[in-house]
Amino acid sequence: GGRRVLFFEMCVDVVLMIHLFVLLASQTTCSDGIDSSCGWEELDAVISLFYVVECIAKVAVHGWHKYWNSSAQNKLDFVVTVCVFMSFFVYYALYGMIMNPKRVIKLMVVLRQIRLVRFFHYYDRFRLLTATAEAISLVGGPLLGVAFCYFYAYGFLGTQVFGGYICYEDSNVTCLHAVDWDPDTDDYSSKGYWSLNFNDLLGGIVTLFVCTVGNDYNDIVIAFVRATGSKFARIYFAVAYGIGVVIIVNVIVAFVINAYLTSWEKEWNRKQKRKARKSHFGFASGSFDAPTAYASPGGAGYSGSYQRRDQRE
Image 1 (spheres, helix red, strand yellow):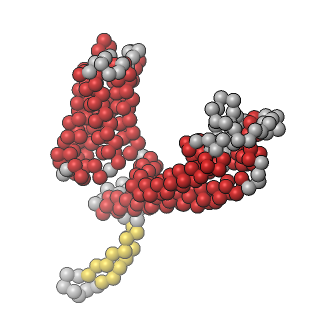
Image 2: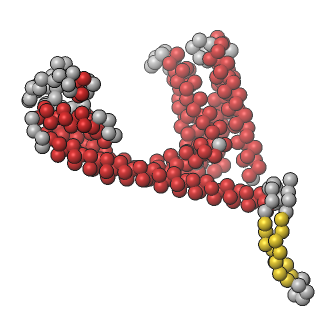
Image 3: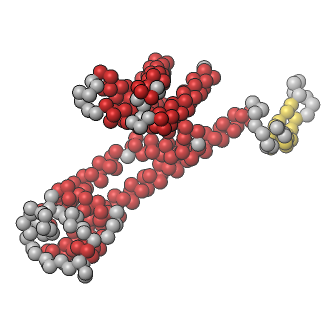
């Protein structure tokens, strides 16, 4: 039951600690990570095989659906284990045929260190952050889709309106309006913001994103007003600010805050239930007040309530 699962998880934690020691020792004694000449390769392979057995055992016991959807930690462990197994396959089966073996070794070392994130699960604050991130990942897709559609559509409109108005010497775009940029008086040119333009769709999306986060928004707007020679260029950026910042960014921020508060409430309720369960079985320490009603077995005698303070060590 639960004790066996807890014991198994503790064994996994012990193996992770041993693996951390192996990684540190290999990086200290071997210049290129874990190598056969350093003597750590066999132990590292055994530990990696243990991770594979761990995943297979959990899937066999819980089933794939419950294993994958029960926690984000299982997803992380499974993905890392599969990646490490594939890197071992590339290293041993396709040695030197696809990529440099040293790069494969370094990749395996980096991937295995990701599993150390498991230890942070024992800290309440980190567990709260992971729960928030998981909640955002589950239902945040539509919001990201709306944001992508906005950047794509409005960036495309920007390429049609401002394409070719700002260019520099290394650009192959023919400038529609030549501007005598003076770095001494113009912030756009002095800061080297030449790549923030609408000469192509990708550049337009990046420019809109920079304006959305508010990074030198005024400098970019003034530069396009100078390049086009019309103050009506401000209308485009004003609408971009209204849609991107006032609506989309605020909705995303509100969604993140709501996900955090929801996760915090669930974590707080979980802690309260755990404290209540320990108090019920007599494992809690401290004191508490508990009103209790008593009656005699035959129904006669006395009944009532009293306040009890129970001191437990």
